[in-house]
Length: 107
Length: 118
Image (cartoon, rainbow over all chains, first blue to last red; front, side, top):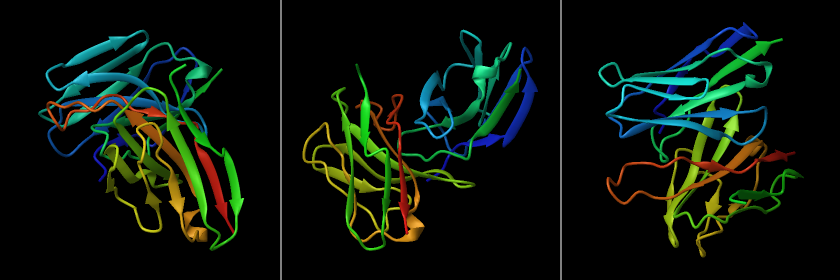
């Protein structure tokens, strides 16, 4: 069953700008994870935020979680062309993934 | 190096010819899972396994079989492939949190198998 839904489906920005992606989910969670997928490759885990956390940072990544709204956001600051990828959220290993947000960062 | 290894990377076959996609992990993970990824449909779970000899259906199990005879291996079997099984397949693994049972650890993904059934 699919839990997380990412929004927008596609995002195009210039290098140096910030990119924000959103995730909405349906049921209560223990934690929420964000993954990145380079074209045609396997997903790579980026960051995990627990249900009792509101914000978490990792390098240029900032994740927020609002359990009352059942939503999360992923912010990539000072984006680079190498950040071009699809980004997915997930709420559990037995949950599916949405279609992701396809981020394109133009040099 | 900790990794999930899928083989083959690319596979072209014909309708009805049985095939197996192998998946192996070297991290002693209890949990393993198969997904297929199709344009516009995201990643959908096919089957998963919580441990040796424990497997269960995901969202799209029809036409697929799996087995988990050893902890490290989780092959995906297509007994009679059809063109609608043309897709990009991913295997993933993670350690299984015992408590709470519904908690989850990050998934480690293989590099994918692109299957074409003609």
